[in-house]
Image (cartoon, rainbow, N blue to C red; front, side):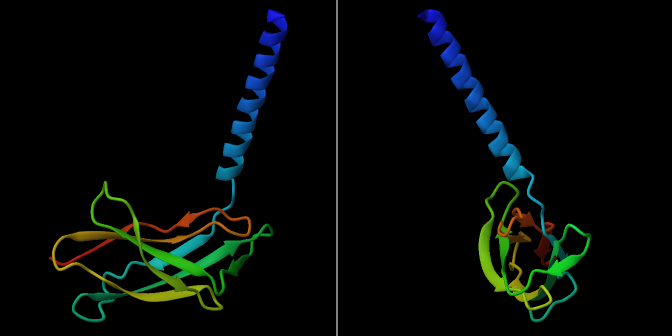
Amino acid sequence: MRTLRTVLATLVAALLVVGVLTTSAGAGSLPKRIIDEVPPRDKQVSYNAFKLKGTVMEPQIDGTLLPYAKQKVKILKKKCGSCKWKTVKKVKTNDSGVFKTRIFAPDRGRWKWRSKVDHSNGYGNTKGKVWTLYFD
């Protein structure tokens, strides 16, 4: 009876390990969208406002890129390196996959910014490059 329990426990443990490995491998292997944005360092609109413009594209299997048209892009910011990212704005892309918005720099200190597109339609979460806005 002990041998039967040992064999069953081993089989159940093996199935659990295989299930966890396939779940984690599937979540990380989704393709990413391409976010191309220009940091707004020299695109100052008013005293503390800057213009941000970017493009989101979806790579296809045949090597072409399709625009991420009429979809949401989140603009995130954080105050320090160990702080959490907070969603500041949600903007929509146009038919060409282009998004535009105005963001604001702090009077003192530095804020880190980035854009993010959530997972959907077989693509994983995609995050843009991190850049910083500040006044000297």
